[in-house]
Length: 400
Length: 140
Image 1 (tube, rainbow over the protein chains, first blue to last red):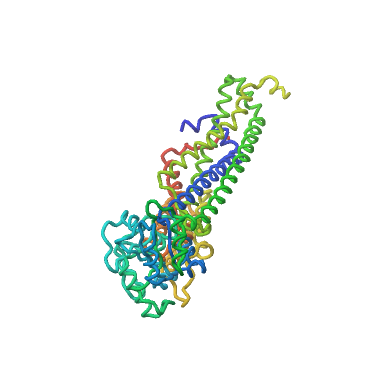
Image 2: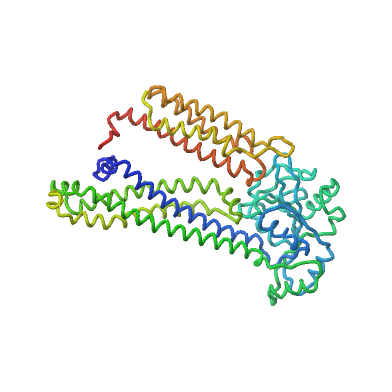
């Protein structure tokens, strides 16, 4: 209530249009600052998350998968699909030198299920050898996956205890994974036995293009970590030269395209943020200067009735701080209401890994945004406050 | 029976919810076989609540201040329930990439939260003025 009695507050309330314009300008600045920061940090977090999830140095896939660009679509873009190679080829790969850890994976795409029209990617892994998916699953589920148990990505609307039916087989949801901001959020993970049962069931129902395969005789890809004493390049070249009809790919190369796009988007956002802030600060400076200039007589009268020079400067500063605080709060709220609830839509539109920071970090960014905006307003008004504290009352009141 | 700024705000938000759920942030399209997915029924329920909110907001334009507060209370409850329809009362589609999750749910959430905040603010202002009728006077 004390605030309402201050001269600064009454000045602001007395000129609602001017006050609203200043509030909107600071709101726009803080909206852009928080929005841009959240976008850039979410994109960076998404990329780190993708690197963690790939988790292997090398990925070996059937050669056909790379020529049809299916691989990147499945692994990076979240498209559904599957490809298989004979187990004999996988054994040849595993017999090469320089293989440290290795684990086979199996891909299968579900058909549309009753509740939704989009198929999901099913990824099977060998629990005994796996070193990429298991550590991630263990964060939310400590037991071993039993046959027909599945673990669902965070973006699937299924929960622990639910039953999902794939190719006529009822699968039990054992756990739901943490969000990664990558295509893995829409995938379903299961053990080797279950995926083989599902592949067989898809073959029995004629829903799989690979009509002549045996689930026990194929794998989709092999993930490899190189042994000590070997470089990734050496192992990749060795496999590509000596094992036919397969392609070994460095996972770093796979995500280099995404990394480049992300860096481009981050740069554009940063440049836009800086440009809008510079422009905004200039406008704020002009707005505060004009606002003080047009009220010179008011300040002169205040000076005549006994207000000190510091008091006048304080009034101008208080006005700026009040508008800056309210405006930045509005900007922060709008920014959070747009980016947090609509993060899935943003991720979809950008087609890049996108993982929002933790709640604590978001709150921290919001507080910093408010502080930066308020301080910017204070800086923008400093010159005007200094000038108004130095006015020559007699000249102003005489109209000179 | 004076029309207040808050009456207009509540009417606009209610119209945005009611019209938007059918025209802008609607649920997923029908399946290839023409059947509807679960999210369609969430959309219908939200639309029905949207109509109630619009009618309540219109009613607020023509009644005395104390009645306006009662209507704001009812609107708070309706908006709160509408907020719970997608994915809590009626489960949405399987993948969060789908339109019902990525567009409809957040849009309904944001509008309903704004409606609840606006209604609570209106109720708070009413009771504050009742306690201190002279308070909050505008100064030029």
